[in-house]
Amino acid sequence: MRGPLFCFFWHFNGPEMALLQSLKAAQLTCVVKKIEKYQQEHGEPPAPMMAVYDYLHKKEMSKAAMIKSKQDMWRQS
Image (cartoon, rainbow, N blue to C red; front, side, top):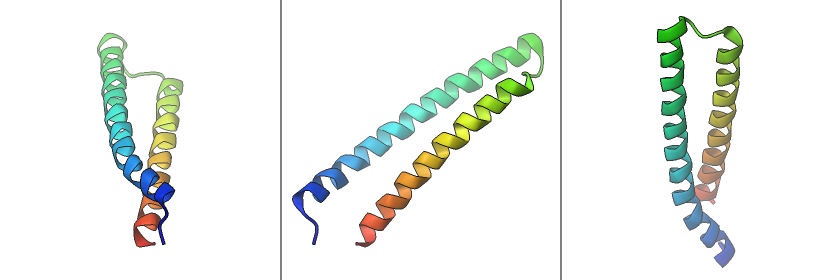
């Protein structure tokens, strides 16, 4: 049985996840533009710069996957 608090968070979580995805897309677009600008001006970005980008990107994708997994579990209950 789903209580009122569960229902509140379930309905709140959908728009929150959509906002997170749109913010991530905007952030990614900004970072990609900066990397492309750097490539045009200086050539290939330094490995440490790309390592930080890859790390942060993987971290965000992991968070999104965890949230999606929890949403799927809630849907099944």
